Structure formats: structure tokens, C-alpha cells
Image 1 (tube, rainbow, N blue to C red):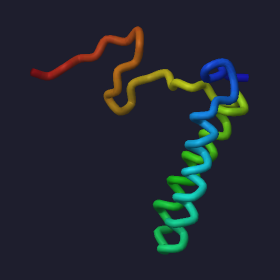
Image 2: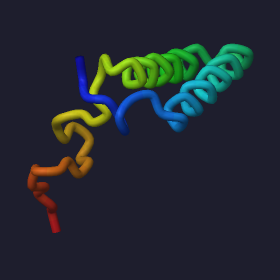
Image 3: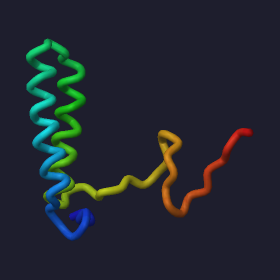
Image 4: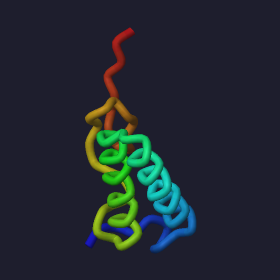
Length: 76
């Protein structure tokens, strides 16, 4: 199993997952299928993190985000 965020199930993740569920319902009501799908993926990811099935942080730098321990090349 993956590492737990903050020692286990947190109020913040529970809240985010609840809000994502509501946003998905709204997106479906407005017939925004792709948006609803993306929100559902975030909802499922939050659930995986809560259960400890996914780590809280990803390893890698696919979107140019700062990741601890990795140097970032900057074009200046």
C-alpha cells in the first residue's frame, strides 16, 4: 500500500472528495460529459489516497512542477 497523507484519513481529503462529488453532479446536469469524467477521476483519486492505495505525491516532473530532490532546468 502507498504512504498515507498526514497519517491517514484526513478531514481535508474527505471534504475535497465530497465537493468533487457535488461538482460531478453539476457537470452531468449541464451535460458537460468530459468535465464530469475528469472530476470523477479526481474524486476516485482522492478516495484512493484516503484508503492509502495511492501516495499523496507523485514521482516525476511531467508538468514542470517542482518535485523535492529533482533539479529543474529553466530557460532564461
